[in-house]
Image (cartoon, rainbow, N blue to C red):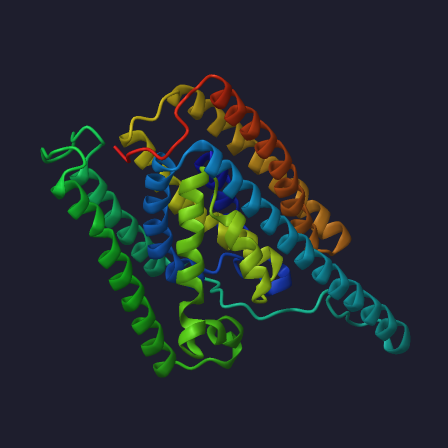
Amino acid sequence: MVTGGSIANVMYNMLTTSSKFGGKILTDYDIALLSEPCMLLGVSIGVITNRVFPEWLVTILFAVFLAWSTFKTCRSGLLHWKSESESVNRYVTLKDESYDGTSEEPLLKKEEINNQLKFPRMKLGVLVMIWFSFFVLYLLRGNRYGQGIITMEPCGVGYWIISSLQIPVAIVSTAWILCRKECCQNKVPNHQEKDIEDLTSSGPSNKLIFPFMALLAGILGGLFGIGGGMLISPLLLHVGIPPEVTAATCSFMVFFSSTMSAFQYLLLGMKHTDSALIFAIICFVGSLLGLLVVQRAIQKFGRASLIVFSVGIVMALSAVLMTSFGALDVWSDYTSGKYMGFKLPC
């Protein structure tokens, strides 16, 4: 389902540009490139923990996670709303005092984002190569019954050795991306791209902030069966990324992680795939309609914080509904005497 929705978001964001950011695309491919290897590693860990953890523990963790994400998102939305209101008032004051009838300043202050006007084929190619590297490891490992490209004992030594190879792949890929990024910055310095560059190149902690939060988002996404963007969104907003760029970048990253997560669940014997495909199509159509409605509202009212509030509302509803239904399922398992402890991964 998450894959269906993310496909719609990626298609829309690749075909549209923003006049607010000088006609540039909204997706920040540098953040996506730096975060994706660790996110894919986290997805694999999350899928395994989903099979190991009892349902009651997953429900509790899910409730805590959604409550925290809702709080952080709504708080960021209020801060952006306040900032937008100040910009609007400042614009109106300046217009009344010095309007000469020739030109107008933009309603919202333009923020410089590290996006390129041309389509970044090289960065997208690297992302696909990283995704394919993990994909090959999953094919070699096979499913929980030992069925794959090569025959091996289910959950045996070879199974876990191949699974553990994801760790060096993620570390090496992230380290290589960071080294390439530093080399490019030293050769071609650009003061106009300082906002995002400062977050990824001004110290060890800032260099690693995106990989670490992507790893956590991937783990939670695989564990709960949701898009990792629900966690990355509040974090990107917290470090100062504008809402439009946050939404586009998260949907792009979630496309890679959700496809990998869905593939792993299929190998692990996921049932009801026909229903999942139907829901994926519904999510695809719903995402397109939601994008059109939200973008029209932003153009009309000039407030990108509407994106943040929309995400916050969805998170709040999810926290109530998912926790309630999860609690009912746990109670049903308890009353029926079903085993409620930790399980083996295979």
